[in-house]
Amino acid sequence: MTYLKKIIEILAKIQILFSPILLFSFFGVISYMYFDSVFGIILLIFFILSGIILGIFFLRNSLKNESAVKFMSRVNASPDVP
Image (cartoon, rainbow, N blue to C red; front, side, top):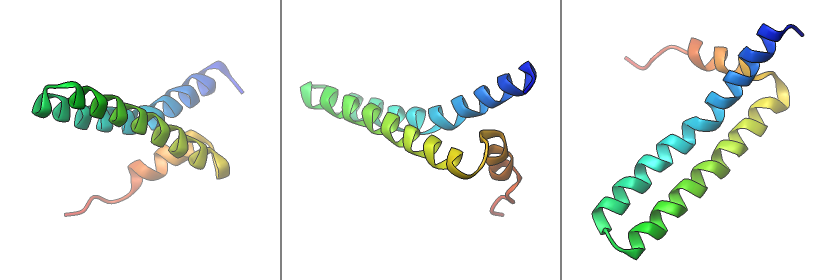
């Protein structure tokens, strides 16, 4: 495997991993801004940890059958909902 293929594979893995982390972090920040107390901080940490766990789960399941590049190309090639 060439260096370029390895770099592309690593970038695809990072993209799969960070998508749920960013989404759940956004929900955590919104909950922190809404509650603005210790409960908000607890919710923020809960959402971030949930995003990390879900990201690892998606990454492991996507790598079970195929490479990360094939998974990302299949996701990006799916038609959008009109």
